[in-house]
Amino acid sequence: MLELRPNCECCDCDLQPKAANAMICTYECTFCANCVNNVLSNVCPNCGGGFVPRPIRPLKARRDGVSRLHQRPSQLRVYTKYTREELMAFAALDKDTAPSDR
Image 1 (cartoon, rainbow, N blue to C red):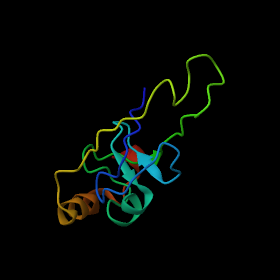
Image 2 (cartoon, rainbow, N blue to C red):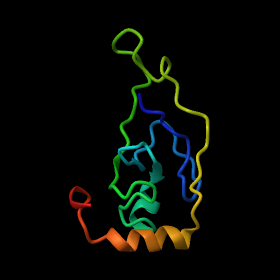
Image 3 (cartoon, one colour):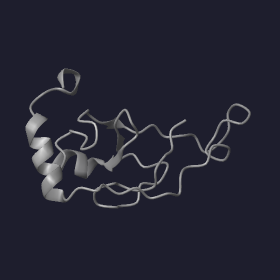
Image 4 (cartoon, rainbow, N blue to C red):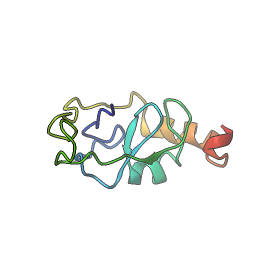
């Protein structure tokens, strides 16, 4: 089950559960689309993989027990341990390589 983290790990902007600009990697590292495109160059600073839009969990249960009301989003804010300069340097190494080839 996705955690639906509440913030961008880089700029700390809020990413509500219904946010269309929330991006995740395969390990659920969560960043906003602006940071993914302009700081990270679609390179996850933790695993080196790429990002995809985070799915939006339905608010309303259309099946019993399956909704944002039943599986609540995380309240724990997560922050990267790297500086913006370190993030950009790491991304520069693989930004021209497709995520499937990293």
